[in-house]
Image 1: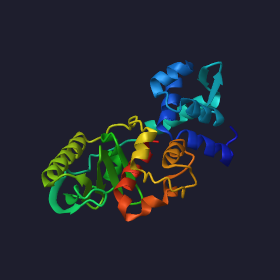
Image 2: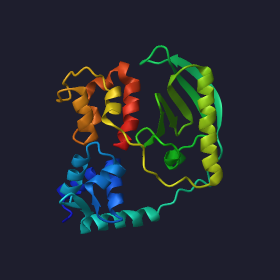
Image 3: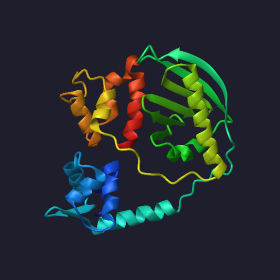
Image 4: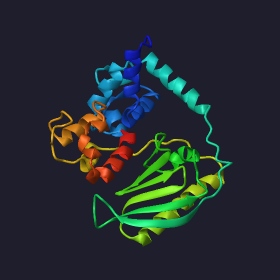
Amino acid sequence: MSGNPNEIKLVNNAMSNATRRKIMNFLANGDRTVEEIGATAGKAMLDFHLKVLQQAGLIELNEGTASLTEYGRNFLKGKEEKEQGKGADLSQARPVEVTEVRQLLPCIADSSKFRTIANMAPPLGGVLKVLEPIFSRSRYSDGIGALMIQQNEVITTIYGTGKVTMTMIKNEEEARSRLENLKSTINEAIAKGVAPAPREKVRVEPMEIYKYLPQTNCGKCSEQSCYTFAIKLMGGETTLDKCTSLKEPGYTTNLEHLQVLSAYI
């Protein structure tokens, strides 16, 4: 690789996907057959993932066997050295308390469920970014300064200011129970002083993306159907903002779910 912008873009796209990162780490231990890779990383869209890595110059494919290129080995080595220099210090963070459950409002997406607004103190601010790895499905947004956590249909958003929102809640009892569990998980990490290292995130399938799309097949995104859009989104060939219907008020909760899921693509 010469390092020109187009080649860098190919590499960044290849490594932005959790499955492809898993394949690269698997190949770091030696050459593997396509069957072995499928057994470890999953067979869904495997040919596509291998092709993307090959086009980026990170792997070589020869008669059903994959191996890292010299560039691929150097890329992983550089990444490992960079990550070893990072520390996640929580020693200055203070334990939090849920100080108030202020509102229980009907959810826009499902009128039988509620949207809860609560307060957590003291505000965690930038510590939220460090806490991201302790939740299996979470994404920190620099844009809004908040940590978004998905647990089945419930999306919890913790803002740096201390505000906490939860969607698709059954009742106030569930809201308080979830807030108490959230507080305990955060305080346990703070007590240890150091957040756990980033871990391999949960695999997302196209049908899970499709579940939260409008499913109207309107074609505004230039794709034939919402399921095709989900496939293209999984492959990094389109972006979530191309689905303009998700910007409508009725799809607010759907968009929140998709924003979290997109972090694992």
